[in-house]
Length: 196
Image (cartoon, rainbow, N blue to C red; front, side):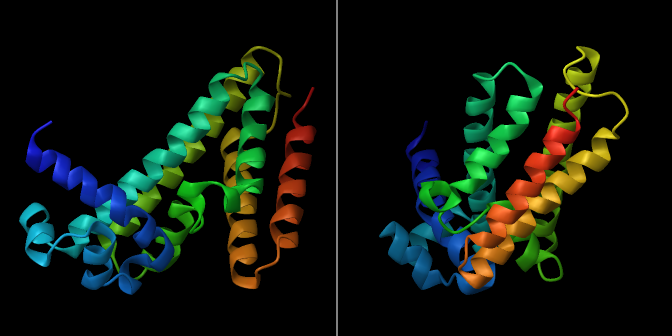
């Protein structure tokens, strides 16, 4: 990796938590320079503008979450146990460093839906990827007789994600974990309903 690539990666890693906590609009150039210890010139010598830094930071944050989920799923061969990874992971989101500011997909989707087409597109792609991951898990389980036949995998995935993300959003807004606990309990019932 070249020195320029290392500097760019350093900027991404240091600003990713800031963008996930403060959002695009709330993150200033001063926040970026404070997080990195670099000058404005160094930042803009590696990135064209704040948008480029924000999109790279989103990609980094999302990549951390995807890796965390995959690592936990790899040790669970049963499809229903793979789905339960989401429940375990998100029930402890306040203790996971890369999720301290909340789910990067949710945070970005809420902020960028009407204001930042580039970030909105990234968040939408992340949601589509999450849906497809769950659909594959369910269909593989159905093929092996480990998941009930009949439930529409895409509808299940969409509702499952909506429960988790909605619970996180309500918990972040209210500061009360009961919203997330209730949502995760319903998501757990969804898994029970597709158990043969």
